[in-house]
Length: 183
Image (cartoon, rainbow, N blue to C red; front, top):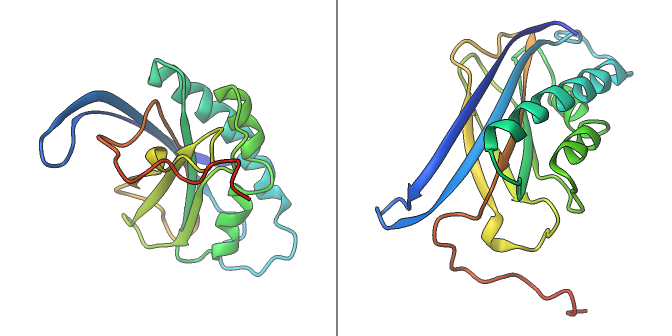
């Protein structure tokens, strides 16, 4: 695993976009910029990227939980693949093995972890979706963090992103989602 660098961001939201104060909401994200061993190649077996994801999932999420300072309620993941890579390279770091270490670190995770992946040029942004870790239908917890790395991904790199939050959006008011009793 060739990690060029890791970055962490912590934001504390004190009001909504209009300026109405809210109970503070903390969101954190960790990003690892890694070399893509399959850049420029069509490779049938992407399993080496599975191991990268499992190891980074553990180390990044452990740091994120400490940064959050409270119990994580929401999680999400994203991958930004450099231009010599394929979207499937992003899927390979997100799906088969990343969820297990993240769920272990956040203490649960009954819900599918929201995800996003795309191919992008140097400095591109990616929207990392967040959702409640145990209640998939909690509309109040559906949120997004927009992330970027100024010098990444280089054409032969992948930026793996994990995000956590300790709350809902500021002043959510679109409904609670369907009841579990609904057929």
